[in-house]
Structure formats: structure tokens, C-alpha cells
Length: 192
Image (cartoon, rainbow, N blue to C red; front, side, top):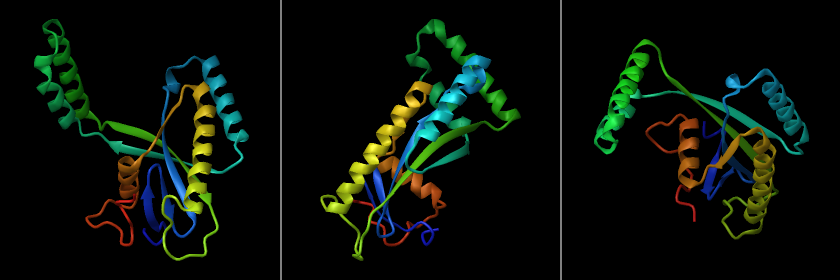
């Protein structure tokens, strides 16, 4: 996977892929489309279409489905039972029982939506760029401009954008690369 997606460095909010391609990853926090009225759904589809048609740069959209580990969540809820007001504790018990029964019958899946932005510069050097160098700074400015355009375009639709910073970006990339035991070679994971 590292040959197909050769990550050279991870910086604050972006990563260097290969010699001159920079990428930023945004997580889109969706709305519940299915609970909207027919009129609202049509408005959202039209707004999303206008957003996509208005972009002057390419984006990649990745939908990741993860099976939820309900046991950990239920254990955490149970451990916080003493912190909850006494009159709400029976409701918490019912909620825990409902989740446990639901998880035993079917798998619970969490869908996460990511938008990947890329920018290509021109680099003739063989070593990775560092913050403060012209190409890195130019990439940072351009990807920030693109992030702002995406966030502003999706905001009227009720979709919030979260920029994956250093640790979240690392986890996203590591999971995308298969999440094996060993980190890909040649990556500066402690980028400053």
C-alpha cells in the first residue's frame, strides 16, 4: 500500500504524499437525510448538486463503515451510572438493555464520511519538504483555502466539517494502509 500511497510526512492538517502531492482529510458530520420531509430532501439534493458543480478543484469522498463494539460503550455507560441523577437511572438501565439486545440480534455499523483534498506542487528535490519551505507553505495555504470553500459550501446543508489534525490524520492514514503491526517505512511520523 505504501507504494501506491507513499506518505513522506504528516504535518498539522496535511500530509506529503510522494515528492510533491499534498493531501488534507476532512471528516463530514452528516445529517439524517431519511428523517427529512420530501421537500427538505429535494432541497438538500439540489444544494449538494450545486455545491459539487461549483467546485473548481477535485475532491475524493470516502465512506467508511465500521462495526461498533457495543460492549465497551455499555461498560462505560454502566460505570457512569453513579454520576447520573437517581430519577434517570431506570431509563439508563432500559437504554443499556435495549442496546445489548439490539447488538445481539444485528451488527451495529457506524458510517463515517471523509473528504480528501489534494494539491500538486512542482518539486525537483528528493527529500521531503518541511514547514517553512516555499512549497510546503504554498500547499498549506491552498489546502486551507479549499477546506474553507468545502466547509462554507456544505454549511447551508447542515453538514459540519472537522479537519483531521495530526493524531486523527495519522489514525485515518494508518487504518487506510491496513493498520498492520509495522508503520510504513520512510515516513516521518513526528513532523515538526
